[in-house]
Image (tube, rainbow, N blue to C red):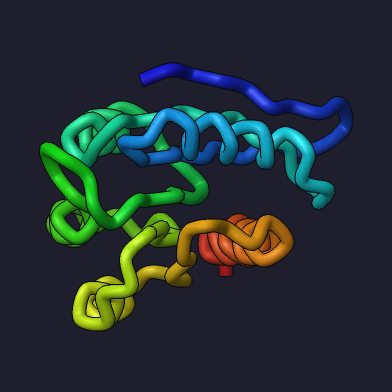
Length: 143
């Protein structure tokens, strides 16, 4: 795991966990988070697979998770199962390069916020990320 920070002065900071086994994808996502133009800046942590992601989720609280579906030691669907057992309600954007309809249906049924195909449309990703962190902020406000 490589911690990275994308923080802009004067903006609230949101914690993002990027889980992907492709270093080039992780770097691209980190770079994109540094230039997205909404009300939040992002503190980014990365995990190379689901096992590293679960360790990070036990250690820290995240406002949103960008989760690859297919990875070596543990894939995204398994991570979602563990998150359910841990009763984590963190918004998840599921990332995938595959067009597996059954896997995407499984992910959606597990409560992900959105399914994002690779290669990414960065404008769509920016919009979805803004919705995800806003939904997290709304969920944590007292009634």
